[in-house]
Length: 428
Image (cartoon, rainbow, N blue to C red; front, side):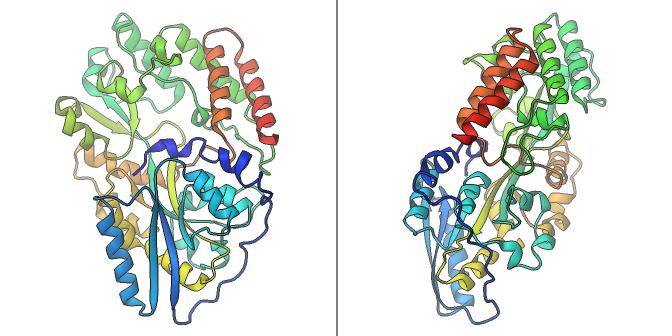
């Protein structure tokens, strides 16, 4: 399984040098209706991403065998691609006309393939799509200037807040009154800073796109043609972070290459707050049981972020009825729940999972509470990273914010510069 990094910048090759460079961009396929209801027969290829290993191979082997047994005369050829270079591989498959019939794609790579007309619009072929899958997951596969939905949500993640109760209490904070807004977070960060003589921290990261979204600002225009996140509300957020950094409420190295990340600093008990998936307490207990006993969860501040993988169907499949049927089978509730049991911390993308006590009922422990919070948060979580966002944009954005945080330019200058550069990169 991969973590969050797949969501950053993987579409850059497809968008800037892959599909477009090969002259394939701008296709309009994918909106055809697939004939269903007849007997399934023939052969298709199913592609996953970095999931053929000792942990997952038995699951997929059984999944394929069970489907073939239920549908005699069908054959599913399962292939898996390595973790590195997946955008390049998908790009070459699209340009060579060899994209597998059913393919595992994150939203950003799926966007590039959809732009090339390579993915089937599922909303035109699955009448129960909106009822059967979580809306946040479906929304991640709806794109600007497109009317369809281009993947079944498969396995999803979101963040929950985690707090070090002992550290909060030591510095005069009440774990029963945890921050729910950025202003409250900064106020409690000040209290921790002042009570500890500047030795303890509550905040430990620079602002990112999620903070911009939490200000009520859109990252990109509705038509997807330009970035628009340099709004007064977004500027105010960066200003607040800059003031907190100047006051010493964040570690000085959050803007340097030596920054270890808020999770690592939380484990070292240098900071009192981090974020993580719904099983963070259980995983921490395996390596640091004393810290795990001190962790209390709460909902994410503002909009919960969404991390999602999906299963798409190729618009060019020569056996679309079988491909669509198998994609539905892979992502039905029973198979998703069985898959998630092998991937702690992730959640199924089906609406039916919401009635499963495993996701909807806590055992009363902080770990159990976190699991329920995660599934509840999933319903409103948002993939805040636009599909056209690239690693170059992310780097430039971070550099501009760092300059604002250190007082070398204003927050307005930082976001104006970032928007201008990102729009330049978008059009290049």
